[in-house]
Amino acid sequence: MAERPEDLNLPNAIIARIVKESLPDGVAVSKDAKLAISKAASVFVLYATSCANNYAMKAKRKTLNAQDVISAMDDMEFSRLIQPMEECLQAYRKEQKGKKEAAESRKKAREAEGGEDNDDGEDEKEEEVNGEEDTANKDGSGD
Amino acid sequence: MAEQKSEKHNCLLPLSRIKTIMKSSPDVTHVAQESLFVITKATELFVQDLAKTIHKKSGSGKSVSYKDLSTLVDEEENMQFLQDIIPKKILAKDYLDKQNNTESDDDIVMLD
Image (tube, rainbow over all chains, first blue to last red; front, side, top):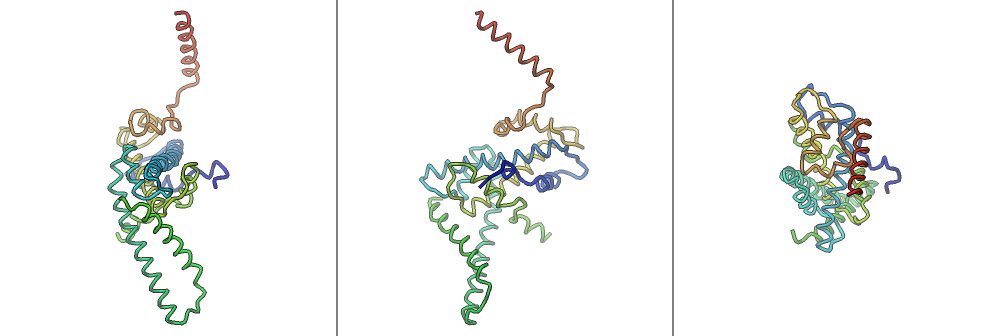
């Protein structure tokens, strides 16, 4: 998947924006500091993935789920990130649920119409995403 | 303010790129959509947290330099994983001196 080493870098512009937004106005961040933060973020992703994967492997699951990631934060001594993460996850779940319901009601409406629509591609994609999530939830029934 | 609310669960960083990084780990087989989202969010929070912490510690208030960052990485326990990629910058002269010193130290050890 990652063919070139650059594929493992995160976009510097976005990292720079996150940094800028979290600091008060007028604070200058040097170029090499920004680059180092960007690299740090990449390594953070790998480190978190690896810690989370340990939890999945311990539970003999093949799919990494959200709870694994949250548990990993404790190991990494980043417990202070857990609360905002959980809040985001709740919002995300709500949003996904809303999307699923909207897709279903669209589907029903289309069936009632007689189903002549070219919009199928998008719907299939959405179902696939939800399917993946369902298996993840089954896997992680212990949490 | 409504925009800020939606930003809370919309990711700034590209999910596809994060997934590529996650999958580059050989042990990882499947990644649930939710865990991808949580890791992405965690990374954003980590960057915010890192920026704020360096700024607080740097003391100068108006600027953040590489040195502030490498000092933080060196001091904080939970930043240890970054030590290889954010090392302290040292002058080539100091490095060579250090190497010479350790070499002579080795000699002493060998003599003992």
